[in-house]
Amino acid sequence: MNFPLEDYASLIFDCDGVLLNSNPIKTRAFYKATLPYGEDAARSMVDYHLSNGGISRYEKFNYFLTEIVSSEQKGPNKEELLEYFAREVRKGLLSCEITPGLQELRIGTSHAKWFVISGGNQNELHHVFKERGLEDFFDGGIFGSPDSKDDIMSKEMGNGNICLPALFLGDSKYDYDTSLRAGVEFIFVSDWSEFVGWRRFFAGRSNVIGKLVQLTETGG
Figure 1 (tube, helix red, strand yellow):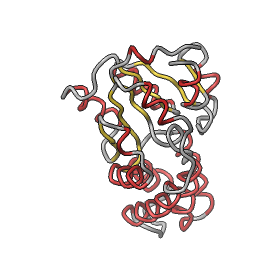
Figure 2: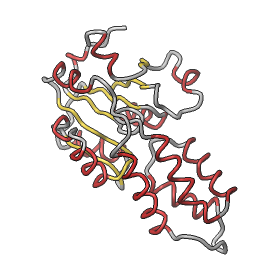
Figure 3: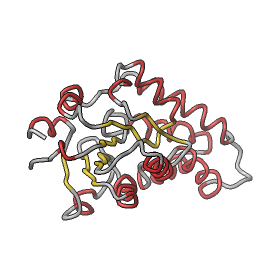
Figure 4: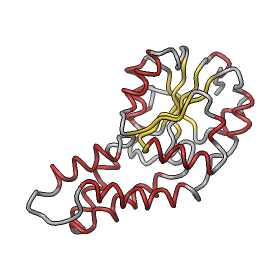
C-alpha cells in the first residue's frame, strides 16, 4: 500500500506503541502502583487501562480511586500513585526499543511539521525524547498530559501550528476517535499496540501498518 506522505503538511505521532515500544512498561507500572490495594484491584486497573488506551494516567487513576476501590480502602492517594507510576515509567522509557526507520522517515518528510501528541506526561516526554536524541525530529512540538489529546489537537490547530492536511499515526481507538473529531486522517500502527480486537475494529475503517518503517519501505 502506498501512503502519499508528500500530501501532508503535518504528521502527528502518538508515543507509546508507535514511537517507543513502551506499552508493556506502562501496563506493569499501573499494576505495581495499585497493588497495595490488592491483586483484584490491580488487575481491574490493568483491565481498565487496556480498554482505554491513549487516555492519560490522571484520568485512569481518578477512575481507579472512584470506581474500582472504595474510599474506605487504605492505600496510596492519587499523588502517591502518580509519583510511583512516573518513577517506574521513566526508567523504562529511557531503555525501551525505538521504532526503526525514524530518521529516514524524517528525511523523507522534511516538508512536513512533526508533532507528538501523547497521553503520557508532557514533562516526562520532553525529558525522555531529549535523553534519547529524538527531540529535534519534532519541530511542531511534543505535547502530553495532563491536557487531553482532543484539547491539544484543538489548541494547536486553532493557533495554526498544526496545518491541514494532517495525518495522525496512533495505536488505539482513542487515537482514531481523536483524529476523526479533529478532521485529520489516521493510520493505525499495530505491532506494539495493546488494543485487543483492533483487526475487527479497523477492518474497512483505516489504513493499518505494523511499524513506521513500512512508510519508508513503500516509498511514502
